[in-house]
Picture 1 (cartoon, rainbow, N blue to C red):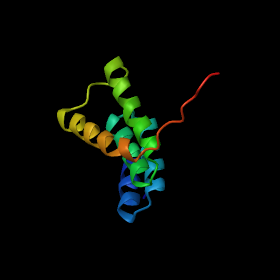
Picture 2 (cartoon, rainbow, N blue to C red; picture 1 turned 90 degrees about the vertical axis):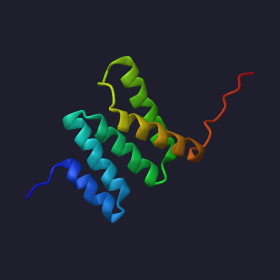
Picture 3 (cartoon, rainbow, N blue to C red; picture 1 turned 180 degrees about the vertical axis):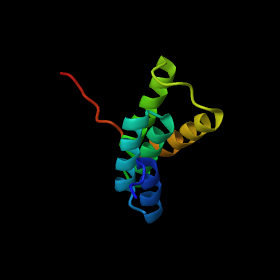
Length: 101
């Protein structure tokens, strides 16, 4: 049977195939546009060692919520997003500073 992308993402995560899981959650978001799938994709980026990508995705989702592009997150997902962002930020390399002469 063909499994939905979210289910495939969870199975890949269980196997430790985080990049694969991320791709499945991204596909799920593309189809369903559910913030939970977007958060899961960012979580897989963090697990795969791509902290900068995770930070960018968590921040993007926050901007979308504030701007009304996506519905408000439930209280548990608000807490999860804040917690994951606080985990990811220290692990992300600092952005390069651009100096002008």
